[in-house]
Image (cartoon, rainbow, N blue to C red; front, side, top):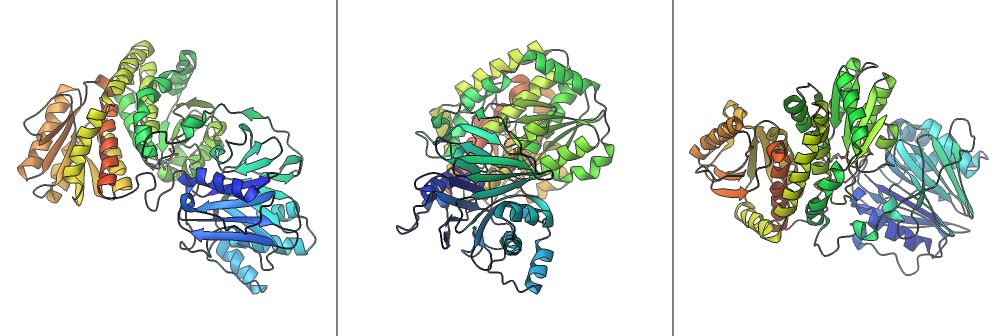
Amino acid sequence: MCGIVAVLGKENAPDAVLKGLMNLEYRGYDSWGIGTAGAENIAIEKAIGKISEAKLSDNFPKASIAIGHTRWATHGGVTPENAHPHFDEKHNVAVVQNGIIENFIELRSELRSRGHFFSSDTDTEVLAHLMEEFLDEGSDLLEAAKKTTTRCEGRYAFVAIRHGENKIVAVRRGSPLILGIGKDAFFLASDTPAFLEHTQTIRYIDDNEVIEILPGSAKVYDFFTGNEIVKRDIVLELKPEESNKGTHAHYMIKEIYEQKETISKAIDQNPEEIEIIADAIRNAHGTFLIGCGTAHKVAAAGEYFFATIAKMHVNSVVASEFPIFHDFLKPNSLVIVISQSGETADVIEAIEAARAAGSKVLSIVNSAGSTVARLSDFSLQIKAGPEKAVASTKAATSQLSILLLLAYACAGDIHAGQQMLVDSAALVNDLLNPRFTQFVAGIAEKIYDQENIFIIGKGANYPMANEAAIKIQEVSYIHAEGFAGGELKHGPIAMIEPGTPCVVLVCDDETRRKEILSSAMEIKARGGRIIGIAPMDSEVFDDWIRVPAAKNFSPIINLIPIQILSYYLALERGFDPDKPRNLAKSVTVK
Ligand code: M6R
């Protein structure tokens, strides 16, 4: 949800910022902008369109200081005026921001009443104007940033520069910022891919910290006390190939294929730690499984895993709806948070509520250094490597695998769980091959021009049907909806017309299999086209996507053809599956 990059100390900092922004494209890609501070003025270049297609003009200054931003519009349309950086009245200061200044309307009218003129519709512009006022009163850049922060409500991070100063200042209040320590340069970014080619040595900036970067020094201060905070250097060990597409046409298909290995990596957890966490789950009174989007569908499947395998009741809740349940958080409650990015605003709010109530937090994330991981009492990393496609694929199957492992551990049978998951990882490895992919692509070719696709499932395949709907919607823009098979005759069956595709997720359990197949019959009787994802053929299927029988792993394996189908539906319809319209990878705003 917007990417920030700032560089001080590189020979051509604007160019380094541009490349960094390209690597953060997954955070937003509707417009971009770069600014640099000269002795007399600030030079800015901004444009609408994808950052991957951006180019700086030849005469843009090749200074050693620059800030930049790739935008996912929240306040104000996609226009060059609304692209960041934003200026103050006198063009002394330039600011980029990620997040939302919630009281910006009040601040803007207050500033207007004092004669400020605004040139954009964004919330961010108030930051530049407030900074201008504090600078005019005699504050230095750092002090002005701090005073500005005291006026702003919401979750955000911003970075500012001023002409005539070789200095970058920044504030973190709810949106991620990471400091990269290069040989002769410092980097500041919303995520590490922005500067990995220059350095893998980083320092995580926490909420309520301010940063001042000068040539040769990058200092972090506590916002409230003003005391300097000495941060630990962390050296990442990321392989550059993990961050690019390799031989694949898109990140989405690359990441789908990476599931050949990611499930094994996810389940490679320390058994003692899993047992400790299982104890915490068993001893908790009130366990909530929280996530957004795909991560919520994972949480919902987790509810079924715990019910069927561990015979335990946990409550899955969409993170943005969790405030309704805050009153039920007690010191002995447990909140299990699922998040690929570990930076999702609604999820962070859930953790804050849990901490305020004294409840424990377990997170299942892809990044050990993420805000979610660092705010948790226990954190399990899925170790899936960077997931860059907006559509979550490998992260989801890894999170699901860990939840299965935890359910087995809670049932006192961690070894059986491990063995089942090791076997299932091998099944996924076999399944993902070009012949299978092409077969599923052939089905996409038959149905890509349909207006609606329905997906049905039972048991843990029901949340997977909902996940299938998200996958299809977000990359192909076809209206897709998931249902519990038994719900059809209570309403949705009215939508079935001759030829309407309905994907049936069939499970390994015989009773449920019979039930879901009879739901499929009811659809077929109304003319629906039945696409079965199942280990065995059935007369009800018009198309059969064969997957291996996988016991409790079957809802997870059923997702793989869905991911491939979604990918090819997007291609058939001429869309870029890596950059769905209106979406961004990391949703750091509420
Ligand atoms: O980073 P998170 O897992 O917290 O993200 C949650 C959702 O925004 C995410 O799963 C989203 O729904 C995906 N685009 C779905 O593919």
